[in-house]
Length: 69
Image (cartoon, rainbow, N blue to C red):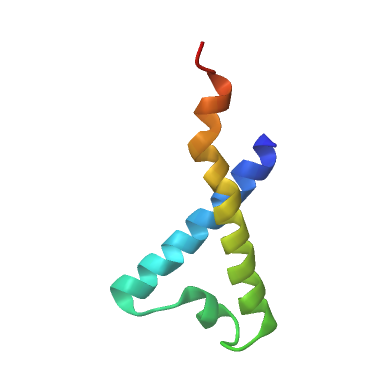
């Protein structure tokens, strides 16, 4: 499970950097690398979104590691 979370964290960070570029410079790196309406762009956004959901588990991991006694 740790490998999955670290992989998802990398994808989430890539997505965060892309959104930072969009916000600061109005530059979308994903659409610059691939055609804007291509299926690859949609797939990348789907993967980043799913990885973000998987990373939500990191927020609650300390509750399962140290149960309240």
